[in-house]
Length: 264
Length: 334
Image (cartoon, rainbow over all chains, first blue to last red; front, top):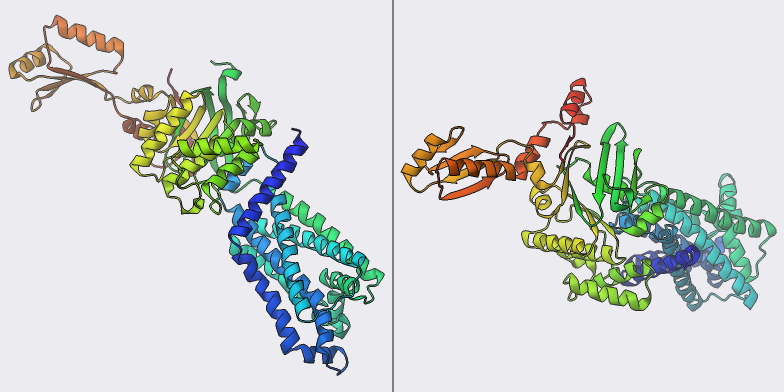
């Protein structure tokens, strides 16, 4: 077998290892899923009237707010599962088996690629679950099949980007607690985006940040694809640019950190 | 001097520092294929660093090494393909079962599914892990984890195996099991590079022992050769008849008397030549002891004699540390 087929097989092996971990110990992922689900229910059933009235200039319409909120909650879900990735990478790096992997004639990148693909798969499963809850409480997208495919592609691309960043965070963290702390800003970003409230209703001094940070343009693009709202070239370009940019940065960062000599 | 291809490991001048702390201060190691080599030293001597460098885990600051004929830095992947490493801290995946750990190794060695299952079953059987095979490795005892660790190392049939303190923390029974495992490995032609802080272990297993202290090799040789480095070897003659004892004590000068035990000690380095000379001497003097035994200093004596300096040479950083490093310079035994 050539080097390339070896590398491919190593990636698959490492992916299987990570999925096995996830299947044996699903508690972390499930616990992280709790936050977006609770927030979804809280914001719809408890704050729903207030939020929609605020957005619609006084006219309360909870159903309309469900439609607004679900795409944002999907991205919150994604940021929470990436926190899980950061924690599991950090934990894995403290395991003795990492030294074994480093002294074996395998494709080194496979260790990280296994984590990334495994995490993206888990994230997509989590998104399906949360979307299902959204549909159950009244989320009614009007997307065409092509728009659904585009939406799925966008979610996959965004989760790839977030996962590579999370892997980097996991690699620079000394342990699981460190990764959890360092990854927290990642889970705060959706709150500072258009996930819960439209950017134009935010205070002026803050608006520029909310408008251009990675989550807002990506969430707006997803809203447009699922609900037919105006996406705008700016948001679409920003969304794809952020996703590709963060993927490349996260990949290069992770690779550099992983190839760094382990501490004695 | 062996040529390169007969040497499983050939390293010269390996150095490694962390900050201003020198961990390895230029060590040379030669291990012929199919033998057990033991790097013996106290905690902090640099044993693990040496293993980490030779097993491609970290890079050396200086020096060269060839492992299984491949250059350590230029052909790291080829080196990795030839070696197996069992580190000091168990390198098993605790979240999955023992069997899954083995199958993971089989996959990473690119064995076919059938081969992988076969090798896994064989090794689990050989290392007495069949019963525990379906349990998560994190639930294993220390000895079981170590056995699984070595079983995983053996999946790819490596030609050279590094074992970093394989018996540290094991109970005596597990330690003897581990020794048996290591002996079996070598009988199959594998080269073993072993680090240990136990003299008995090196004595029991190793063909050659190098004593590492403060980042330098302070002695190298077989266990017997090392023991001869320190004075104190002697031949002991024990008598049951007090009269014979007195006669012998008078006839033999240069002996130490042990009147209570009716025993005489004749200084000896324990070589065959000296032993024959002593026997000839006893014959000609007409002395017949009831019991004759040869005592060589044990490895403990050697170890403390060689590493007994109160402070490891390089850690003081003062001018007299250089002197002590020189005085502790390598004594080569041939």
